[in-house]
Length: 206
Image (cartoon, rainbow, N blue to C red; front, side, top):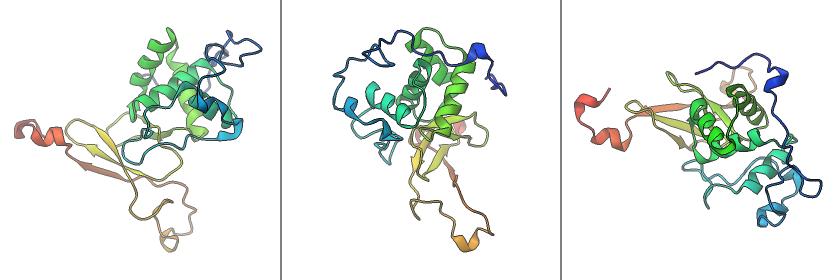
């Protein structure tokens, strides 16, 4: 997997959506009446419809209009790569960069790996997605951001699932035990065997 450059070159910057018309806004391909989500105000902020169990919204993947509104609501410029990358993370929770890039290319036709990294960094900084990196695994991206849920990882196949914190909705470290630190985020990883690997022959288990 390619390593991100420390500073993107001008050629790798996210291109604006040049096809947009003055009347249609940045996403020219989206009709004005794309659905009820199209009426969300620009200050809608991060996506908040993720279900606790699997990182997906209860009613299925969010529509393009909702993802676009979330990007705008975070104060970011809406570009085709950012929208495609965010959609891939929502469709494939806990995917690695290669998987996200392949999906974005299938959607856009052409996008550089550097552009995908740039979009992932921007979306992570905006708290629209979450970067995780379990031991022995490449970086992965979670559509559930802004809460303090944990993860369980299968030692057999590497499958990842979300686990809600049983202590609180904030960082689960008592203030008295933080040694003066201000806790910003908690990452707890549980390791085990997923149902499929439990059914596998013993010789295939780690």
